Amino acid sequence: MTAETSRYADFDSLQEQAATLRREGLSLRQIRDRLKVYNNDLLHRLVKGEPPPEWTKRPNVKDDLRSRARELRLQGWTYDRIQVELGCSRSSISLWVRDLPKPEPQYTEEERRARMNAGLARLRATRDAERQETKRLARESVGSLSERELFFAGVALYWAEGAKDKTYRRSESLQFINSDPNVIALYLRWLDLLGVTPDRLHFRISIHESADVAEAERFWAELAGVDRSTFQKATLKRHNPRTVRKNTAKSYRGCLVIYVTGSAELYRRMEGAWYGIVEAAGAQG
Image (tube, rainbow, N blue to C red; front, side, top):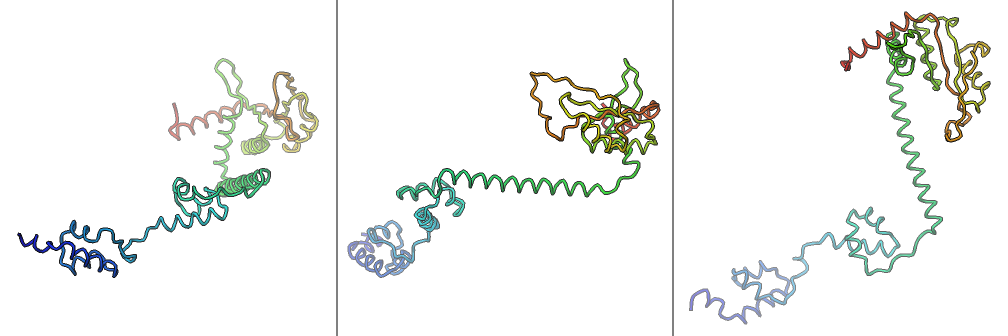
């Protein structure tokens, strides 16, 4: 019989001692040191069937989450609310509380829809506030414009919205049309910068035939600072019955057309400046 076999020959005696120590609250390490049993397999066999003392158990975080999830579910919380509150997965919550009765709906369908709409309204309001704040900061960052900056802004504006000279149709003159009052106001300010006097300006509106022509002319005349009587005859757009118009609100005032007489030289300056901007920006194709 070897020394190792001799040491563990009386298995029943060792098992009885190990069980007693286990019941007294000793850990495996303490039992090992007390009985001088350093074979882990044998040590586990000696204490088999004896539960470890509570103090040796590692705390399980999920046990606390499970307990809290069940508590909230019994209070009538939905899976989504519990998930937000505890920060655990929906699948875990479902597993923990599936034996509990489904809570009664807290709200009627009408109340639920009203709460949802109220939430959407708050979300839209928040996003609109963020949108307006971004615009405000951008607007304030512009500050004042120098005459040079205003000139370039007007050149880009005209090239985007004004009439252009074509090789197949020579029309070197400033002719501009737009429906946005702010665009029109900026364009008129640009013409003033170029030294265009009011007597060289001719106005006409282009508008749908069903609109209030007189009211539109009054609006544009006031914006341009001229008398309505100076306006040329309006161009009326005929109604196509197959077309569903969306510009039918009271704010619809058609487009204002602005002609500048004797403006060939100004047109050439504008076009030349435009291509200068393109070259300076390195954007020429």
